[in-house]
Length: 295
Image 1 (cartoon, rainbow, N blue to C red):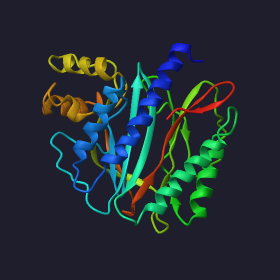
Image 2: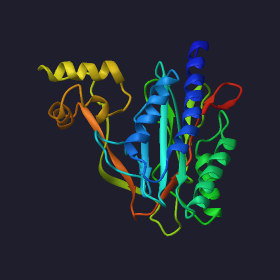
Image 3: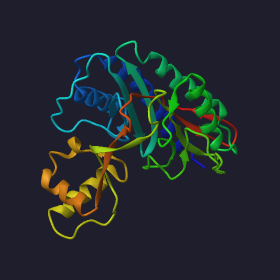
Image 4: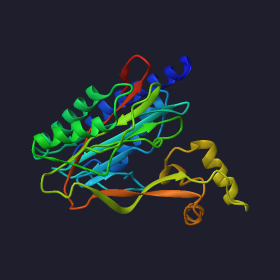
């Protein structure tokens, strides 16, 4: 159960994400640098009194998740692109997570609408004590009823303090999972939709410039130990961007900590057949009486 103060943090994080998500959609334009989108989203979260819970993800076309700009990124949004902006904020470690998809042409408007409808239907399905698998059934049925395909191996997730993925997955396809939604928990629900002739699954691509700490005990030698301790102090177990720490250490220390498995770098997740992917996402808070969409 959350305390009153913790609920206030959760609701504040949700309010920040809701406001920034709306602004993020308006800055996705042809010719805009991806780095500018990431930095503006993250700066706005801070301005409103939160901290980024993870680096702003910008997924273009077949990139489903886990791409954020590296330092000096020159990637430009092209005309006709399908662009997903996935953002999160935390207040004292309590996280809200949401996403919006923008089409810079007319080709993908229907697919975006299907993702949003699947999310709406999923949110209507959630109840305390209800089966988590019911969400996957509803999402898959909704998406397929419009002639599209869900991404089967991307899921929503339970959220805990300073942890984005807290162990419980919320599927986007029908499963036999017997798990149930618990009271006083946070869950992110996020359908991913692709074209009917797509593979309908993501695979690992290149490193996506997003890192997180996987060992709480750091290396013994300096300066690696000091750098590692700074990372834990700043981010705890939340993901962070290479560009956030590029001035702290230099390239070599970061690479060393990755190679020695003190840090993990997320790969970009790309649709296996190269087809475009749309996403919609909200975070909800379950109490013992109700389900509250906080974003």
